[in-house]
Image: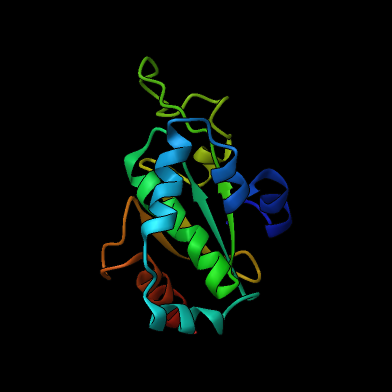
Length: 157
């Protein structure tokens, strides 16, 4: 992982602070998803065992539909399982730059260090800051985000 966990924490916001800091109409979309989504209880129970041992970091933008679907679920996972979730927000595409996909700023410079192509990118890191798994856009191996995060963590054990 290019940054230490201390650096990530210093350069990001908590998932709930991120959602609460969004402007309308985006904030409403994120909050509606958070209020209506029901977590898989078994996956949350498994994730609770790993609270404090892993950090989830995500790259997000208010305009992104996949972010509006998945970042609120990360907030629920954080609240229910106690996993720390940090967000690099404010990503903005740069359609005129043929070399760089993201305009820096406002996008955080970390989009390049973490090779962010599509968002959201959800990175699961261990206590030493090593990336143990990554989800791009949406879960691909499990039906839900919480199940896929649980699978990533269990496979690292």
